[in-house]
Image 1 (cartoon, protein in one colour):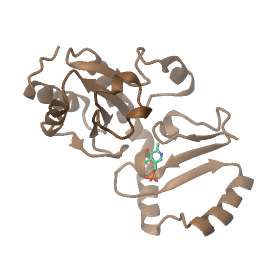
Image 2 (cartoon, protein in one colour; image 1 turned 180 degrees about the vertical axis):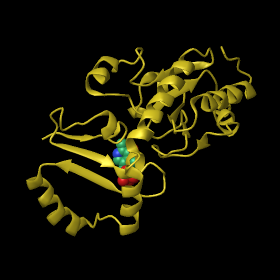
Image 3 (cartoon, helix red, strand yellow; image 1 turned 135 degrees about the vertical axis):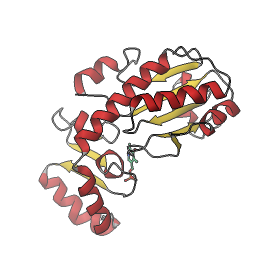
Length: 218
Ligand SMILES: *Cc1c(COP(=O)(O)O)cnc(C)c1O
């Protein structure tokens, strides 16, 4: 059986069961709720298996959602398609802008032709490639941190799929280093593009790059 964690893509951009998976797992905490204020999860699949999960796992492991969180997520999910359009647009435009910057060491986003998974992503994702990208600066640990502290609109925080843009710095000392591709090893940012105006976000990144002494192309 194949189970796919579809959290980063969201069902708006990718539907694993239509592509042949047996289960699709979604963290509702992320795009589906969309406002960074509730926690939940969903497993989508055949009824016979879901009945078993409900009867056995939920009883034995206690993984049941609180009614208030369920209500918030139901409310948030109504605007999923509208929000995803802006997440997709922001992430793609920011990824393309970052790729042109001389201070940027790499950009990883499945919607960029330079990404090694681009052809696969294009086949299985539509209309967009989600709101999460990674990038690094040609700079040391402290400069990466200073860049983040000088951002004004983008918030330094973990998680993703929030209406607000979030960025997290994972340094060269990160304990999960062994999982990362070579270009990530000098430290990198995970950036979750929110639903703000695209140009406001680019301007925020531009001014933060300038504040640590980097030139930008535009
Ligand atoms: C956040 C996340 C989870 C876990 O979600 P919860 O918020 O703990 O329910 C699982 N998979 C991915 C890819 C995630 O980003």
